[in-house]
Amino acid sequence: MGEPPITDPARPEQGRARPEPGGDRAARPDPGRDRPEVGRDGWDLRRWRYFVVLADELHFTRAAARLRIAQPALSQQIRALERQLGVTLLHRDSHGCTLTGVGAQVAGEARRLLAEVDAATARIRDLVGGRGGRLRLAYTRSARGGRVDALVARFRAAHPEVEVVPETGWTAPNVAGLLTGRLDVAFVRPPVPEAGLTCRTVDREELLLAVPVGHPLAAGRARVRRAEVVGLPAVMWPRENGPGMFDRTIAQIWPDCGFHLVRQEPDDEQLLRAVAGGDVVAAVPAGRARALKVPGVRLRRFAAPVPTVDVALAWRRGTTNPAVRHLAALLAAD
Image (cartoon, rainbow, N blue to C red; front, side, top):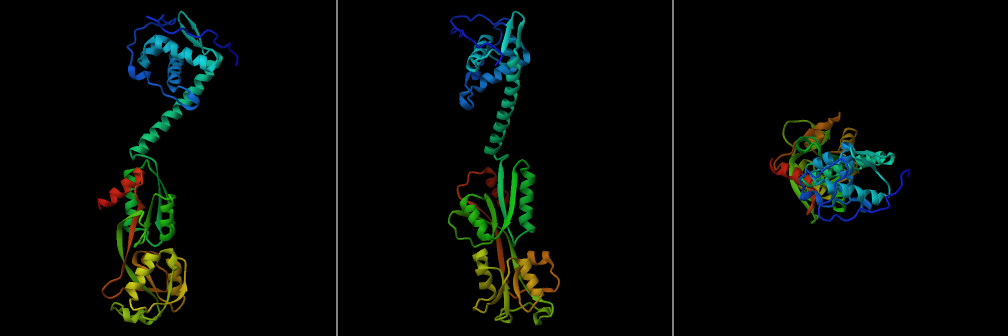
């Protein structure tokens, strides 16, 4: 490696150790500095820190003072590092020390190593304290905007150091993602019967009836009665996408089994386009229906009792992710 290995190990310190050339024993020992900091492959990271400071100062006394350890202890640790590496890192003389060629290269690598260790340590402390980390979050397709987006925006503002990783899906795959651990939190359409999840309501919105502009129910100011929609050809998304919301919708609008499904579409936008292009009707959450503004569709309100659906925030019970706890706390504060 370009330098002869150290062949004579340093003798154990007995009584008062002989100071290294270029240094004295003026520094007061710090007992906390003697705790080992072990890295990969058994490396004592404390020795690397000592060596980096010594490489900066090139003087044992000044380096020991910066490190708040006794100068003989610093000398011993540097010699131990040299023995471990099998190479001479320093040329020592009466005026101090200089780095060998390989010592200068090792010092550079040590600085990079310690910078990575310190950065990782800071990230871990932030994660444990809820100040960092990652939040894998899924929206539900039928609920964007309103209180849902406002809650996430408040979380981002309060915890800018947390990486939010968003996606969008139906309630059923969102629930599956929570149960398998792929997601940390998800917005869902209750009811969600899975026992392993905690759900908290974020918002409640009205269900509207979407009809073609030329449909008989499109005219008039009065609200639509349940009896007027019994048996009408209807379009709906597949039940497996969100069984709880599907069943709740049917139970509120077609309570006497008058639901006549003639077509299925994958999402609310396609539902509304189907309504605009034919003689079918659809029940759609108000927020989504009004945001899409599909031409050729008239939105009507139902007579009392007004049908509603909820959107909730769900997460695994017993989760240890602090970001989930902070998001839930923001919701509870509303």
